[in-house]
Amino acid sequence: MITRTQFDSLAAARNPYSVSIYIPTYRVGKEEEDRIRYKNALQTATQKLEKRYDLAHAEAEAFLKQAHTLGDNPDFWKNQSEGLAVFVAKDRFEHYACPIDFEPMIYVSEEFYLRPLIPIVGEQNRFHFLALSKGAVKLYTGTEYSISEVDLQGLVPQNMDAALLQDDPENNLSRAGGAEGGRGSNNQVYFGRGGDPSNDVEDVKTYLDRVDKGISDYLCDDNAPLVLGGVEELIPIYQEANTYAHLYTEDFAAGNLEEDNPGLIHEKAWAAVANHFDAQKERDRKLYGDNQAADEASTDIQQIVPAAVNGRVAALWMDRNAYAYGEYTPENNGVKIMHDEDKNATELYNLAAVRAFQSGARVYNLDRDELPDDTEPLNAIFRYDVGNQTTDL
Image (cartoon, rainbow, N blue to C red; front, side, top):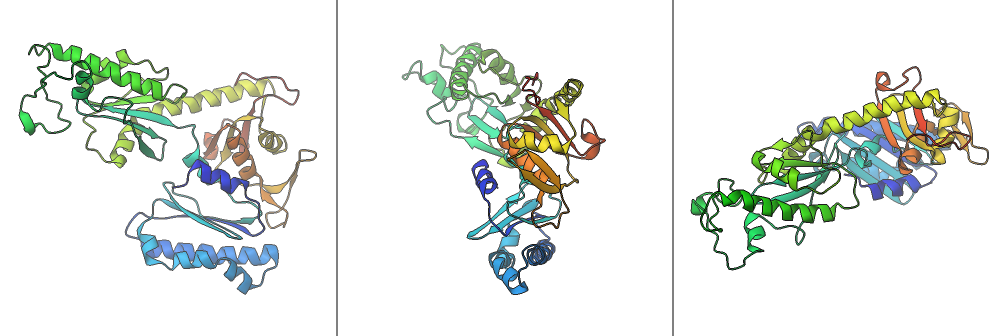
């Protein structure tokens, strides 16, 4: 899957004959259908190259040779996700399996078409997920579409045993049930403090205090929400121990998560935190109305594109099925609308989305009826208006 670094590299590229291809795919079972869809997309790309740049058919086919070779590899189609993105330029060929069911798109211009990838590489839905049990501690960083485990070695105690041994290396901790409970078992009774099972509560507090110390130090400069998961009895104790400023307490993922695979971990974590990001969307929608009244929000493409290019957009909404072609002139911040087949035309929503995203704006690619002002396909809140007055965002 594509990373932010790869995205930024593609966004910086400017080459004649830059080809971007998006198609929906299936994870398993429909390899031939995916291959045919991709082959048809390459045929369309060939035709677009011929028409836009007056290339002979053989020249366009030769330019796409690597893309054709990829499609002819049967093994390639056995390792797909929900969508495929392919980028071709002179001396450049990249392809990414992505967890988004893309609308088919074949784009030929001097820049790559990257608007569909923003939800994957963007950080507006980024969160941390801490899976807790007495037998293990795991931290993940995720988005709506992905999750990855953080290496915590040396940052936190590996488990409750290790946390308590920090107090007394000679402490002879034993476990009721011996090996039957296994690694990560949560029905453990600790006898490290005089054999009194009631001391287990204090042991847990000590353990989670030390976990919090490591986690909070690691996340100290972050502002993404930290979602908790794991054995339910540990959640309120960790919430009390927590010192990280952005702990999410509205929900958590219950259950022993030690043995779950990353896919299940992601599913449970996102289910717990999704409402947080939905609330952010609603706050932005309300803020759009507030700023529109102060002329600090707009639906005018002639205003929005220059503002996005110059880093003045704080939040941007687009109709996912809408496109506008034209030319942006930096010298006068002008926007000229053109036909999509004009040789100088670029897709202006793509330009606005990529530049706004790279300057830190929240970018929403939605159905038309989800826009704050659905009378127009493009909405934006400005960081400051044309008179350089600051907004509340």
